[in-house]
Length: 360
Ligand code: BTN
Image (cartoon, rainbow, N blue to C red):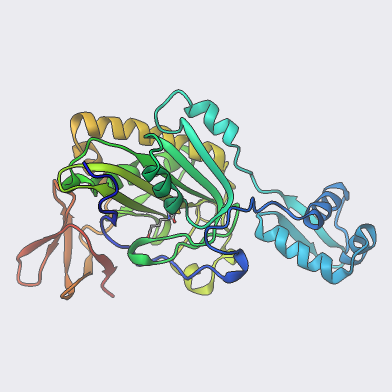
């Protein structure tokens, strides 16, 4: 089998993903650690040490910088996930620091399994999918995981951008070398979607639905997306990269006004900050279990779960095809993972891929 002969996106396309990453976040492909600058670290330390709120002027005096520099560094710390309250008349108070990802903790829990036996961790990277694909081509083993705190060129479906503020999401890609027919490769997305939904529900009181086949939604808003890319030949998958983006502790004000109407996070939906390390562990362990089950017994259990979580069923939708939009009512998902749509005349058509929107 020829390696990497054809790499392509699989499956359907969401309508809720975002806007291009802004240049200020660095160049695509950058591997800098995205580490805090000395100035930011000093300000964070000063905030930690102050008993209550402290003014920008006082902080400036302590740090030997201008109040304007303090303001700029406060903004950076907030972008990194620090919750810094502005107490009117008193100044700034550090209310919470971001829960940093601990790859040591993840590796300790997943090291004995095939998924998660090897990690590549980046503070900042272009795209974890791009990196995982390059590792795949260089022969990296099944189960390799690429994780980043920040992506400068995060990718969604159909060439769309995937935008996440640094340090508040889970952005990772898992390299699989599964024994799967190419015709079934899109079902790996379903397996991954179910694993993510289960992991989220195991840590929160939230109910996660799947918008066929790769969007995870809470209420009407998207909380996670999956981008599966594969290479192989017509018969078999050589490797698959499952890219997963979960909006974990993103606050409403972190989104652009456009994304705010369509995207949510676990924290915004559930009102609690989530331990990203624990969530990553749970997703990887469930992905392992579900992949093994699918490879041994087929995709029916995952499809059953997708059907239970299907939020399109019974809804009037439009699906974009190369010949233009097709409108009708979503009536379920068949055994190949295809979306079934009842057309206005009553005929049922099946779609293996497409960009779905709800009819208004
Ligand atoms: C979608 O909903 O369109 C899929 C989004 C997938 C985003 C994740 S984030 C980690 C991985 N790296 C990427 O560049 N994309 C995926």
